[in-house]
Length: 216
Image 1 (cartoon, rainbow, N blue to C red):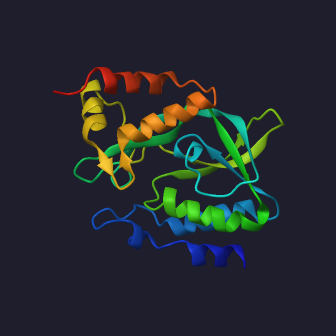
Image 2: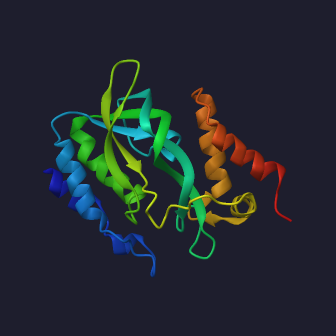
């Protein structure tokens, strides 16, 4: 099966994944085709995880390594109107924003299953095409690898900007989507980061805010 055939065989259309009134600003299929083309299928596929991929990758992999990306950082600053919230009560999920650095994990997917894994991952992460997928140099103890990461532009309508503490508390208290609450998502990520000996002080502050100062 060719890379293009894999994309067509496994990726649902954007209209099938997005509810009425929330169709994506971009068609995810051309972005998937570009990612498949840039990967090429001649070697194993590397993916960089920094949020839910750390604790729920949903794909088979042959290896994973701790990795750091420079020039990007993990931030709970992306609106979620499906997975962790609703159009009426948006929740939050992580995006990879420019600036700083980010510790996470890289996953090595065998070449033979790379196209299928990438295409299925697209259905999960790119249903509304809000991320900007990029191939980023990831530094590991066994040398650098080039891995695909899902980054977020500050110009995106899904970027929250800076939210007041009161608004953050309200979101943590009430936002819930098809995969559960924003608070559960943040806690699961925090727990996995702790297990991996990765400290995220910004996420620590957000969870203290949610736990110690619930809204009235």
